[in-house]
Length: 321
Image (tube, rainbow, N blue to C red; front, side, top):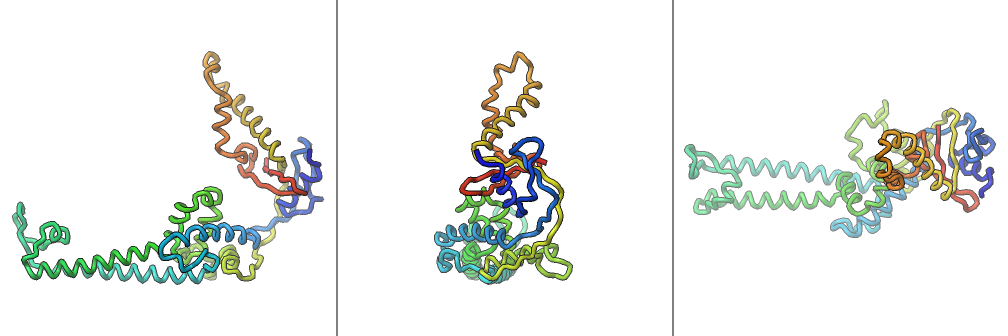
């Protein structure tokens, strides 16, 4: 059985406060109260490095197996400058495609008018008309088809290249496809973190401060991603008292099942008619309720499970108020 001092130390390390600020609650030795203390808002250098570590792990899986990305190795060398370069290439490709599509439209407008079978009026053929009817006896139509085919090939090739650019949309799709385990456990850290690294976020001015600068958390994250010295831009704030349950893994599992059982008995069982209760599987309900995770049940404050290690023992922390 861990000492109460170890539980207090685990909570103090998680919150970044002195252990003297932790005191036992009157509710029991596993419930600890935090005196009013100073916390820091924003993304700390440590948090930024953790996000970057997750993002780089995803890059390491994606880049070696996707055509066109092999030149970037495992992703260790990827910086925001690489992402910016590919962002510009993507914009150039979009502009080129738009010009080629307009070229196709112009060429179809220059074609002579025909009266197609089953139609009363003469009209200029669409590209699909030309492909379907294969009007290759007319030199003008034949040449137009050839030119349109060349343009369509260029458009298709450009689209294929665009699919390999290091843009936020492309990377997000590949991360979800090739790194589902990372995305599922760290959606906020991985996908949202990636967004702030990509130039795409600069299209939305609401992300900037009143001076037109990136917010602090973006600068911190980009410094970590680029391997630069990471500045601490967090700001201090005094927080109110809080109560936390600090448990070992076995204690958390036991408390989890116990609380789910109490929820069933207090909230669901009274709604079931007495003559039907024998047909309702309480254990099955508890098992299915566990799909939401321990934090959802044990943390009445925010539904989160946190952890900290003290002398080789991992403690799981749940804020309860």
